[in-house]
Structure formats: structure tokens, C-alpha cells
Length: 147
Length: 455
Image (tube, rainbow over all chains, first blue to last red; front, side):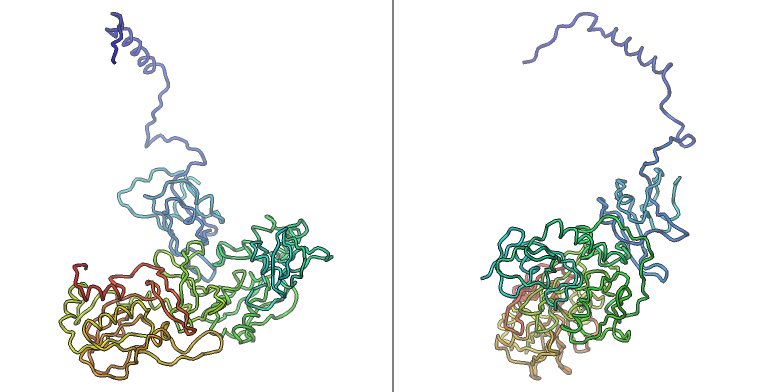
């Protein structure tokens, strides 16, 4: 059973509430600090632990990665694809190292699992592109963001 | 039966049995490196030491036969300390390159190090390193990882009957190598990789293709010869990466030959015919069978010695349907090849077909020959007689007289029963998905006889 609440006259015309609400709006408009920034020109500082676009660390121009397959093993999104090969100066290296960014959930488990400190997540968060290409090894080696 | 007590549990054993085997049977795991049930006992890794009451020192479980009333502790502090020390000692010169080692994930050294070893290494001196010689096309050697268990040497001497592996030098400088540095000659070289408890001897064929923990394991039977070794197909994403033997004391103990180990490659080749083909063009199943039905006059059915019993049954029904003769083809002799495992007859079900009482093809004339086989038996000499193949065929086998191919399944893709040389019926199990438009023989026969709209 529905009961209609009896309300007084002042409550029914809402004038008091409207004035109170406007007062809050105006107070915030004139007296509080701005929360927006001029994005492309101004940028926020993110934490060092921010998990953005991946990169592969290299030592003396050779990638640290030994294609041990621990990152594709631990990856919950199954977005890392590695093909291992052999070189004269490096017993095992990744011939192909691809990350399908569209599938990646940026959990950072790959970084945690890596025994060679090879795969890392940078602070780059602008990842919108016009194509759906996967990240390839040469691109991952180059792209390091601010780290 | 005599009884002993292991970790408070009573275990019956037969005289002469060693502690490791008895413990394994009652579910107590004792770590071992050099001990292998199929090889002689040397007790040199010292990993299996256990405490036996009334014996002063720790005893090696693999070389100590149990006696009646023996009380054994495998988990006392003394044993655990000994294991940890042994692990540390074995890992002194080990490179710890698990990320690049193919064995990691199925490595005894890795597992026991995790279970019994220390987390940190105290060793600061330079590790001993070797330069590796090439060991032929099957085995890749990495001597740095070796722990000198000599399983490979004993395998060469006792199972492969070709003493080609030797230990050179002494003490810290011991190097396991082939005699005179020659490549391995045995037909059973793949087993070196299976028995090696570390990544010292790994398969070149499997090298870096897949990590061990990704592989799905299907127990099945090798279709390489009439022995029918128990094997395990290791697959990932419907691709076979490796075959390893399974223990089966009645047939192959713990071993298998290289031919059986690597023959799966042929069935994953590009040139395997996987689309129905008739009169020079690739067709849908419906049309190929339609054209074939019109040609079935004076036909002769030939079944290969590598087919399963289920497939032969299906084909014999088809032959009955047409009132045609059903004959077997392929080598009709079988003998021991090398007194180890291999047999001279290279087909899985030769003895099964023999048992069914089929007569062998001996050049009988026919207008059209239907050859049914699973890819292992050599095609018969038919001369100019037109033939249609059902089963596994390759591009190079399409002779000018070949009228059509109905692609079937190999032992990797089908279930079925085959009979080995001892007369034992063993089951093949499907491990990977059917490739292309291939179909099993019973399925083809069903559509052939009853029509049906599928495909």
C-alpha cells in the first residue's frame, strides 16, 4: 500500500533546497581549486609503478630476453607470442616476440615473472592507433617511454 | 612375504628388491638421479640416501636391498640434511640456465633442487665449463649442465648394446662424451634425452620448439612397427611436438626407437593429401563419392597392414556391399630386427590382419583397385591398373594411374585397435584434431554406402 507523505508548503515549492544547492555550486565555481588540466600540453605525473605500454630491455644492444616463455605462461590474457631460435652468440633468443595490445589487460604479471628483467611496462598510456597491429620485437626494443 | 617399515608404513616386498622401488610402490617418494629402474644400479649420485635403523651411516636406497624387519626413515632430519648437501654439491658447477634449457619444467634436477635444495648458492668461484662436441642429428649436448649420473653410459652399454658413451677424465674434470668424439650411431639415441635427469642431452628435433609445461599428453601406441610400443604424444594446439615412450614392461619397458619417435613429422607435412581428389580435381566429399560410385565395376579392395581392426571391418563391409574381393597388402613377414625393440615389419597391425585370416595380394587382376592404408605400409606394385586411395597419402605418391584420393586419418588422429607381435590388442588414441577435410575410414564407408548429405 502506498502512502503519500504529507509535506509542508515550503518543502513543496523547493525554493530553499534550490538556493542551498546553487550556493554549493557557486562556492565550488568561484573558490575551489581546478581539477582539470590542459591535457596535451599539460600532463599528470604518474607513479613509477604505473603499468603502461610494454618494452624490452636491452644490454649493449642485445635484448635481455632469452625466450624462456615464462611471460606467455603467466599471461592471463594470452596476448604474448614468442618464437625461440638460436644464434651464434646467444644460445636462445626470441626470433619473434609479439604482444597483442588489444588483448593485454596490463596486469604486469609478465614483468613480475621475467627472470631476465627483459619485459617491462613503461609509463606510456597513449595507445590509441588507427590500425590493430600487434607490437613486434623491434618496436618493443625501441619504445621505452620515460624509463 | 618379508616386510619392512618405511616411514612408519609397513611394506611387503620380494627378496632382492631395493628400498627406492618399495618406497615408490607404497607412495613414498625418494629422490634419485642416477638410479633408473631399467638400468643397472651404480649408487653414485648419493641423492637417495635413507636412514636405516641399526646401520651406522646413511644408506643409498637404490643399492640397498631391503631385508625382513628393516626400519627405514626417508624423512628424518639426518636424511634431509644429507639431501640438501648433495643438492648443493651437484649444483656447484651447474650453470642454472633454466630459462634457456629445454629440460626445464620436466627436469629432475630442477624439481629436487626446489624440493630439497637450498635457495641460495654459496659458491663464488668460477664454474667449470666445457666445449661441446656435436653428437649427431638426434642429441644436442650441453656438458655444463651434466651431473655425472652416467645413466646415458649405462643405457648405451646395456640397452642400446653399443658402448658409445664414455666418461673421460676423472673427478671434477669428468666429461661424458662419445668414444673418440664420434656422432652417436645407435637407433635409440632419443632415449638419451628421456633418461638424462638434467638438460645435458636434449633432442635437437624438439629444441626450443615448446616449453614442456605447455604440452598436452596423450597415451597411445606407436604405429611404426609390429611391436607397438607404448608412447605418449605430446601436443599443443593440435600439433605434435614430441613423442616419448611410456613404461610398459610387456612390450617396450621404458624405451623406443628413433624411427618411431620422429615418424610423426611425415603426417604433419604440407604434402599430405587432406582434400578429396578425383580425376585431377579437388572435390567436395559428396561429389567425389558420387563419381566413385559410378566407377565401381570389377573393383578389388586392398587393406594395408597398418589399418586398425575397426577400419578393416568397415572396408570389409564395403567390399561385401559390392561383392568384391578383399585382400591384404604389405610385407607378410615379421622378425626381430636388432634384438632390442625394432621389428622388420613396419606396420602396426600386421599380426591383426594375419589373425583375421585375410589372404595377401599377389598381383590379382582388377579393373579398379581401392587401396586403404594409414600411411605406413608401402604401396603395392599395380602397374597400369587404375587405383583409388583411401587413407593417408602424400603428393609424391599420386602416380598417373591414380584415379582419386579419399583422405583418411593417421595414428595421430584416430582411435582404434591394433594387434602387436605378441598378439596383444592395444588401443590407439586420438591426440590431435583431424587435419583438413580428412575423415576416418568408417565415416567414409558410411557415406559411400548410404549416401547422406554431409559435406
